[in-house]
Image 1 (cartoon, rainbow, N blue to C red):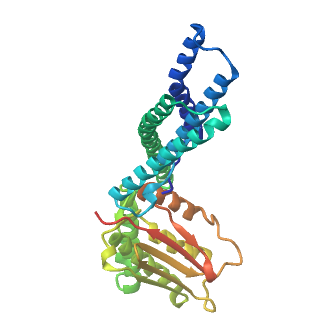
Image 2 (cartoon, one colour):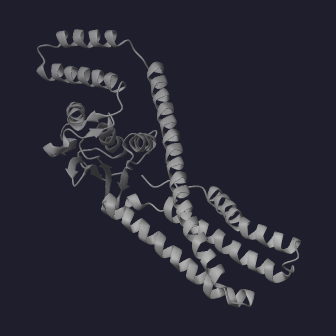
Amino acid sequence: MALTKVKQGEVVKTALLLGILVSLPKTIYLYNGIMEGNLDFSMSWVTDFLYRYLFFYCFSWLVIQLNANIDYDGFKWSPILKWIVILIINVVLLFAVIKVIKAFYPLINGRDLKPNEEGWINFTFINLSIVLFFIARLLRVSTDKQESRIENEQLKQQNLENELAALKNQIDPHFLFNSLNSLSSLIRENEKATQFVNKLSYMYRYILQSGETNLVPVKDELKFLRSYIFLMETRYRDRIQIEVDVADDFLDRMVPPLALQSLVENSVKHNEISSTNPLTVKVYSNGESLFVENPIRSRSTLAEGMGTGLYNLKKRYSLLLKKELIVSNDNEIFKVELPLNQPA
């Protein structure tokens, strides 16, 4: 998933506050000097204060951005290499800012920095850099936790909506199973019809059970999908062909229930299926993902609810696997990629 950035309002407020806190000792020193008569108040002191404060603020803002809002996890680095790179970036930034503030100080303030002032700048920026690093990490952790809470609430809401939809459409499972069994006994001599009813019964049982879990093994999804394929091939005969080629090492990976079936159903629902334009749907594995693709043969009339099922699957997939479905329609081929997590 894309990195959720720390809000700029929080970054700016933190940088402003730290700039004020770091400038406070110098401000108190100037105030006491003026009040005791050791220093004369002049615009040079104001310029000096504003110059330092500007660098404190900019430095604070940059360090927080570098450590809280850059997605280092997006780079395929080892944890040790990642932290080495982060530390190098912070050290380079620290020395670069110190060099810049010393170089431009005479141009802005009309005098060179005194040795004790240079030492104070070095000491202050080094300490500020350390403090900022930890503050940035805390902001990053806080933002991640907040995002996780939001995602969990979304998932709970989605589950509640699914349960409500199931309740609205609920038929007593025992009644339906008993009815299917009765129908099977009536058509026992018709092997094709009996097989159709048995597949339909299995699919109904699987759909009911899938409401109790968020993720299922790919092998279970494929078994369910093959039952669905049987029903579609029975209905459309030679006008549809659904090919499944998933490697064995994918079978224990986890996917949201009904993910593959809903994508195949999406292909059936939104494409023309006829003897002159038969539909071929492919389900296969490649790399670390599963794919479902079909040639685009748009119906003359749009199917009802077009896009809703795919949108809901995207939302479920993102919340459950923290990955994004990748949809493309290049070269008149509609393709959906389901990236999978590594097996535990």
